[in-house]
Length: 155
Image 1: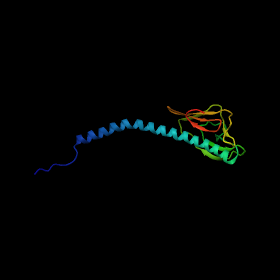
Image 2: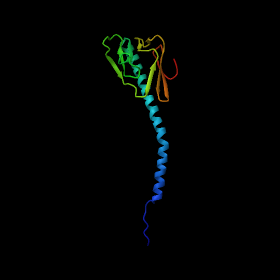
Image 3: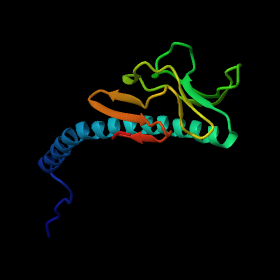
Image 4: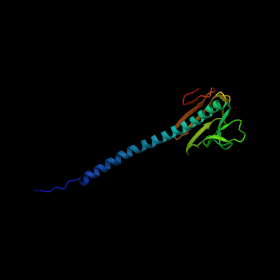
């Protein structure tokens, strides 16, 4: 009666390990692209939530509210805050974290976005188009005159 050892041969293990390595090499670049897209979606959604929060606070409180960078003259990439326009101390009612490194948010000639007590855009007097870019990913956020925040598309 012969006793044969049960298990895998060295060649079978090498073939299996090399196949796993090839599949991993194919999957990793697309996975990093998925992560980058997810990060961009999350940051744009956070901005949209902050703008909608400011608009709803203006309606609920009956007072104008603003969304602006925390430091005067800072870019829109930095930390943002939502404040009551009538509050001279500039105390934030909500803080929005800064964009990740590599991300860029631009709003041409806009230092603050202000909503009136009816939820409409008070300042600036025209609709605001904000452009978000993270590497090759680009997205737009539009704030219409009626205060509606639109991701992509236009007013």
